[in-house]
Length: 274
Length: 204
Image (cartoon, rainbow over all chains, first blue to last red; front, side, top):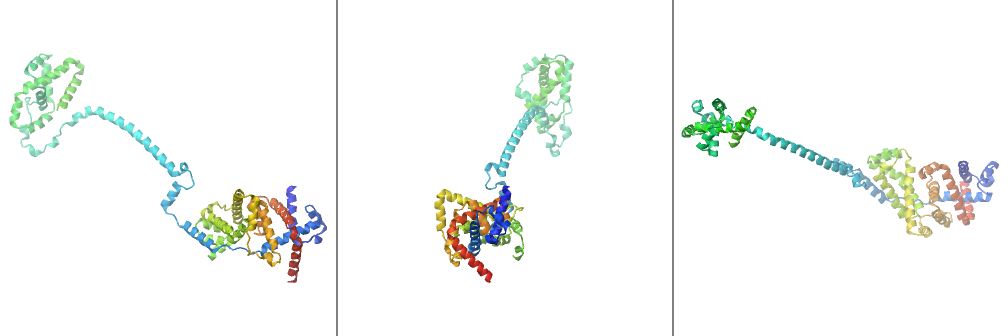
């Protein structure tokens, strides 16, 4: 209903602009009377509308200033300068008019810091585990530190066969050094001999000692002078006894099922002493 | 340059989005005059203010062309932006001054270059009409100025003000009634003027 009334109201404008009240038809007058009280009011409205339209049309229009266009065109040119790749990246990461927390660059930086922290903590934990493993393996890796024959060149071995130990008389140099450091007296040796359980066992131990790789002895012997070798030969028996005694001591304190383990420990000790 | 003259408003806006300065130049030429006069009517016939507002309006187009919805009519969109700028200015003025004083101030801003009424031997009518326009409610005024000074259609006004066409018609009719009452003292002169004009046109 209201919509219809609004439609009718506006249709009056056409009549106001085109016809005077006297020239309206009967139907048009009836239609106009719904909104306009009298013919006089109709004429007043018509005069106002016509004069306003006339005045609006004839009124001098103001023109936009030339300077305004110049300024705007400069502004347009400035904005049309294509930004570089990094400008675009920067504009994307740190857009203006956005709170710092919502800027992608800031968010990515925070994520990066968090990732670094997490990775560092993880690596630290892994690193501590590896350290523990390394400590445990230190003892087992020790035998691998045996000096390699590669260090010795063939030039330094003129009479290789003559130097190589062939008999049981060759005493491991390690034993010599160990004996010298520990300063075992003859009395101690004599006393320790009584600890032997049986002669065959002692013999077996000696054989085992001699059967050990002659690597160390050989390399050490090569470095020694002939005179020193003589001195070493003198104390072969006693030194053998010293080493055997030590092994025997270990054997006495352990069960027979642990013989091999005990021997390994002694070997390790010897290497440690070296 | 000539190519751009055949472009539609929306095509030119697309060009502005792509930083085409010639598209902007063409769009400016099309609407700058219309908009500066709209601001002039809406903002108390202040020429300087009208120029400043027109500049700001087009600067907004340069800075944020993406604000324009390509599905809308550019002309109505432009008028709606301009109308919002006027509303903001009214608010500022109402905060600064008493409304009635403000309107009086608006009336005092005169542009002596307007001589339409002088040519009709009745300069007072134009001044009075301006004053009465300034006294109108912002909604009535904007619809009236768009309709009779910028010659927008009812549909365009409805789109610009985001109201129905019926509401536009209603506003226009009651604004006309209001002005008729205010300009009643000029009625005899107006009637005389109109008769003279009609007689002149029929003679020609």
